[in-house]
Length: 247
View 1 (cartoon, rainbow, N blue to C red):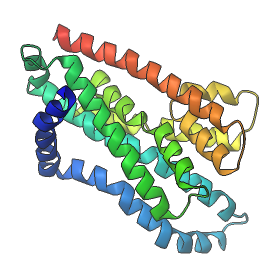
View 2: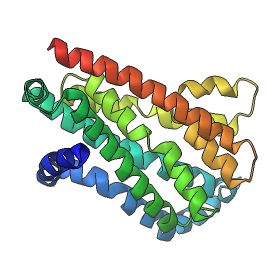
View 3: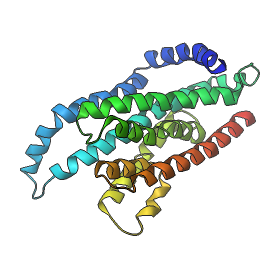
């Protein structure tokens, strides 16, 4: 009941904030638009590109674009929430919450649960639209679940380490490294690969790829990834709350 009241109170405000900011709107729409392009535009471009290069691209197309959609959706949604938190920090909304019946912890639980749910929903829609999934609905949902914590992680990442939107944009650019690390793991199969697991994006990517190829160790990546992402969330949330109380 308490959670429902929080959603009823804060949900309309979030919708209003996103509707009035075109940048935030586009970040939510991009995954679906990209999925459509992957299905109907990219295959023709890949065919043309293969005629120009001396190697095949098609064998890598499906796993790479599927991985890209899996991670892009929660990261973009997380960044939307991160920028909303930065706005609320600038106008001292988070400070004001400390003297209201709604606790900062309760507010943050709402703030982090919503992007996870939206990410899960959008991912399970976008990947089938793109036509790159090679497994059933249950496996697709589990793949989306493995990546969903990235949404609150990136939201807290922005809100914790950026002081304003300018710094937030800079952090967004730097966050590109989290996309690159799983790609390295995909093409470089060495005993050192697990060292790349320090990146939270590594685990859902490896789960997705192992699931797609029917590897039995896929479930290990799912379990370890969820535990690791949860630990990171706890650490970032604690740091964020400490910084908010101090301000």
